[in-house]
Length: 435
Image (tube, rainbow, N blue to C red; front, side, top):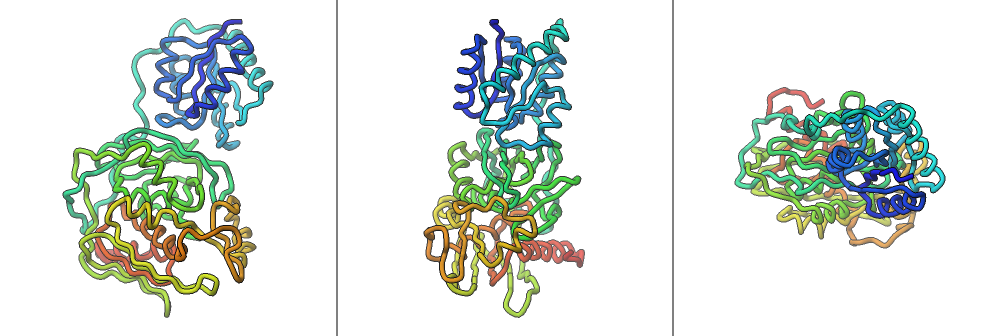
């Protein structure tokens, strides 16, 4: 036994642990964290079997699996994931994977899987040659930009994307499931797009994709949905990221209920200017969302982008007001991003009946009881209103471009944020409809 096993996983700890398991059993190993390099290693090293993670920064595992099978129809590939679903597993097997393992990996199951894959490959016979005709293009290129609006103006600021592809893991707040998210740069004039895994449905980050605003913002296209997009979009808006592909399964990770982890991640991987001026939505007059006797939401012309918000709940929250101007990403990171989502003890039964909040734990949102915050210390005395502003900044990025205008909101939520944008679209384009 001296077979060569290729290990492909974005987590170094998994690479080391799996390599040690395989070497203990007499296998040789070669490893990489990226799908593109995995294809090159397969071409040059001809491994006997491959352990392939679902979530990779440049190509997700299913795309890499497809490319490997095109290179070598007899490739013995074992898929693995700690953030997958039964749907992903079924699709991987249908695409030709020999097996699908859930993390954390069991020693015995790992060895059984590789031996079974090698036996199946040996029984099928080794292929005579690989298809080395060239690299397959990365998905997500040539995506259409957001729709044109009469309010668009060319700015002196550049378009921006991320410097390198990356992966983030976490729980979905409302689904409760483990979820992964891969971020990939896109060229100028692409816009922000979500790509569902495993079915590869493209969902533009645009108001026209909004399907639901109950407790979070959900986007839908082609029968596929992505939930809880507002925190990520808030950070992208604040950091001026205009072109990005986000691959995700069902729901964006919630992390600690705030947006600060997204800020840290962007700063770690880097945001880069692109050789093209960005376009902005410049509010030309007052647009107002018709609300109830107390609710109101207005956007008016301004030099930059700002949000003024008045919040009022019964004690222990009370009335809170905050006025925020988005001058720099750093100001957003320090003043708005740490503010966490919140919920009330009295609403938990209803939230559960709606099938929401399954991922709510005591460390990823603020739980408010009758007289006090139940589960945590507040990061700001007015953390609740700051989180409302975080949501406004994220939801309003669904117009497809950075905004120049001043928002004044009173007692509003996701539905109102979306409603104001529909009002802008209807009145600016003369469509006469806000539905």
